[in-house]
Image (tube, rainbow over all chains, first blue to last red):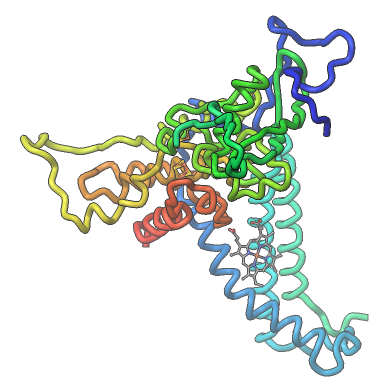
Length: 158
Length: 255
Ligand code: HEM
Ligand code: SF4
Ligand code: FES
């Protein structure tokens, strides 16, 4: 950090590329608002999304913490988990419902959260589009595959 | 107390009172597109009374050391909202920040507010900020005939939106918001504060329209309750609370 009091902005070595008639580009902010920005969609999508994050969050506290407790702490911790353990639990509609609900809520909650993150950090419209496409594809795939397994799980599989 | 920086008293008396002046380093983020495409930090050691304000220090530099230093200020008394800047990493008005309150032992960093295009040194392009302000229609909307006398309002009704009437549009809140830093299409706290001022005004009848505007994808739902805006506001407006009240109004309107 130089202690200069001269009027130059930093050391300019030799000929400067820029002068009054050829200024450098200004330091632009990402995605600035313009006159054309407000394109009202007139839907409540963001409102419902915001509510869903909070409501699913409350339910997930019970589901996820309960899940972690049962899987990792009680009855000897992780070492008890095996094919038989899973088969035993999914024989009961209660645990089927628990896992199904947890799958859907966590996936949609996580996906909507990541959508927010993409909205925050991806600047170019193209990047935003493709990242969201990837996110939605992965979400639909995981939710469908998980649901399929929970409903079609066969404990007698060899 | 205006700007006593200029008149250092040359005291010849032998038993002179100890000088109030200390040496402070102002570390300023300089940018001049006519010279370089890069912004750089530049240090300015100045002799100043620590009871002076950061703005006085900037004046001293501009008037005595480097006339090219560029910043905005108009009133110099916390009313016009021209001189919001990032001082020691926090958005403040230079004219309301005393040097003694921000640890003059260490260099004081001063940069342009974030999230808006930097034009030169501490001057940013405020157009997107005021565009968002215009987009919430910050004026009284009414239906029917105009009353022949003033529009009356009870003291309680006035109290309802008192906090948000204090805004001076300095952009300290909006440019402290991390969502706005990354996505300038978000309305930002200042626009929401000024919409709040009319949404909760009993005399105004454009509340529905304004709520509809803020219900959109760049509206209040992008707020993540970081509280940066409340911390930044030089008028002490509870900005985050105002945003939450708009959210609540939207939800109770639906359910
Ligand atoms: C354990 C209970 C949980 C609660 C109470 C909870 C609550 C919340 C809330 C309220 C938000 C919105 C924050 C905001 O709008 O500012 C959020 C965001 C988020 N959640 Fe959760 N959540 C939980 C579990 C999960 C799980 C299991 C996942 C992953 C699958 C997850 C992933 C996310 C992500 C990615 C975000 C977005 C982060 C951001 O906005 O920066 N959450 N959560
Ligand atoms: S709410 Fe406060 S910080 Fe935001 S623009 Fe108004 S006066 Fe400035
Ligand atoms: S110069 Fe007017 S608010 Fe600081």
